[in-house]
Image (cartoon, rainbow, N blue to C red; front, side, top):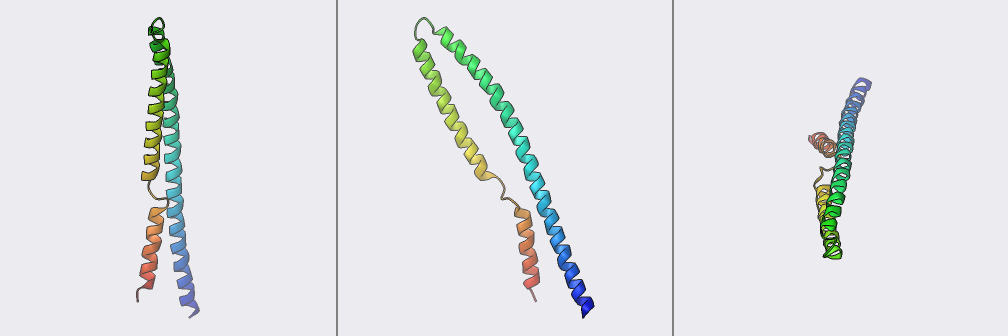
Length: 118
């Protein structure tokens, strides 16, 4: 009797250890993915920002003698539209992300179903 209880406890601990390792692996993968995305996002924002700044300066200088205020206003509207579009894309990407610990939760559900069967 004591031996079978030990075996059940050993099996339960093994299940818990496996699921904990799976959860830790998923957490590490998500953390690495997030850091990678943030690095590339920061680089893109920096370089595109510098390029847009210089482009805006060139356009305003081209229209300096005739319609500099119109050129500056149109550029501001363009930047506002681009910023709004980028915000919508970011929101869409955040909604598409995989569910956190999805594989771990699925394995735990399978374990529960297996244990519940006679």
